[in-house]
Length: 86
Image 1 (cartoon, rainbow, N blue to C red):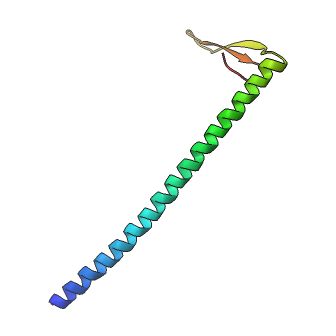
Image 2 (cartoon, rainbow, N blue to C red):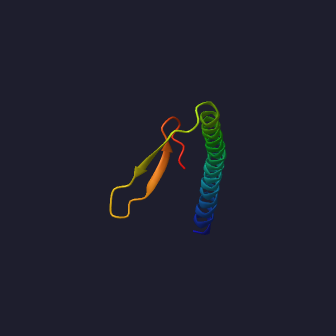
Image 3 (cartoon, rainbow, N blue to C red):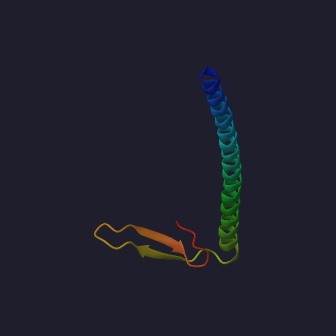
């Protein structure tokens, strides 16, 4: 009876260890993805900033005003060339 219990306990520890190892692997992949995703977001932000600056230098921003519908609609000024919001 004690041998069965010991065997089940060792099996449990073995399986638990494998599950822990898989979880660590998944967490590591998630962290790697988040880091690369953040890098992509920064790169996109930099490209947009370059587009806005080029538009400002080459053509000058040509803003149009857009107002939200509703009683207290907010007004936005957006460049019609590069979609820069002011």
